[in-house]
Length: 146
Image (cartoon, rainbow, N blue to C red; front, side, top):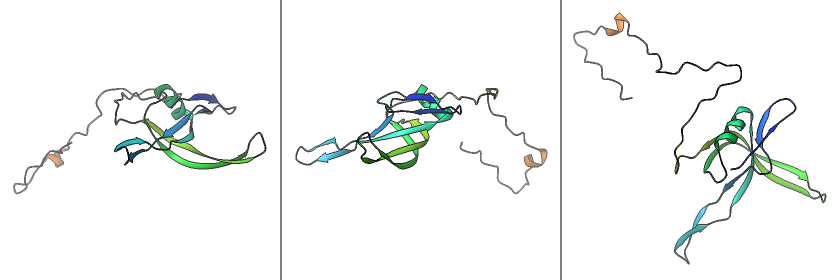
């Protein structure tokens, strides 16, 4: 995936453009050659808005295997010659690097005007005296496996 960042007049950021294409190429088994070969590729233009678009533009590069969720949209338009054309596009809600053949280090981003939260372990609830008392007939509590 390669991307272009644009900012609309209302200040909304979009990661989109003519060079952001998501490609899907199935692998099919060729019985004559007894091997897997590339099938017909499918190319879909993809739009990812606001902070998610900014994050994708900073994190993903061309050729990366990615996962996209969103809405598939059909759009009809007239080309330069006046011919009516139809195209399929994805209005992406989420885009992520696939971890099938890669690893990733995630860095949390914060909304503009929001202070970063303190890092460190999450607070834990302290047991109350009532919750620590056990009856003589009860079995000891098993610790949670997680």
